[in-house]
Length: 218
Image (tube, rainbow, N blue to C red):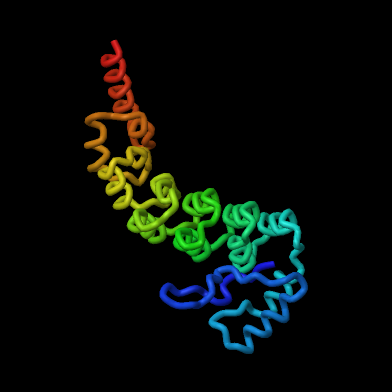
């Protein structure tokens, strides 16, 4: 069993790497009580723990079912940080998962190396904020995970990130509906399949692209 967030690690200290705190089966409540007595930085609310966390089965399939069905953002936060990827992904893909949980999963990925598909799902979640996506893009070279490359595929990717990604060679950015109009005009000077799929293009523009492609292949 694991309890999330009891003693966050801080770089440069000897604090445990405990966005996950491992607890032997049957000892969860004892550990929570001990940590509360030690005045730990954060302990799950006891009423929430008793109602939601303690009854969860040790079987990952049952935690996955809970992650799919839950409408409780606090429980979904707990399950999104589960050490079993299938459980975490089920929570991440729940539409009730909060922007704060998505931000946590994404921005701690370099330190905690979760399943990369979990991070990609978080990046593409409808509730992820433009601020979180901007953070991902701006720190993409600091992270040791490839999920940052998917930031331009998120529906909430902000225009400034899309334009910077395109200028850096990411052609996928041109297909995004948020891609800035001034850059879209420049991209259409040498159209690619990605820019041709931008939903803002008119039928006239698409016809022009198709005729240009046909003349080049003739």
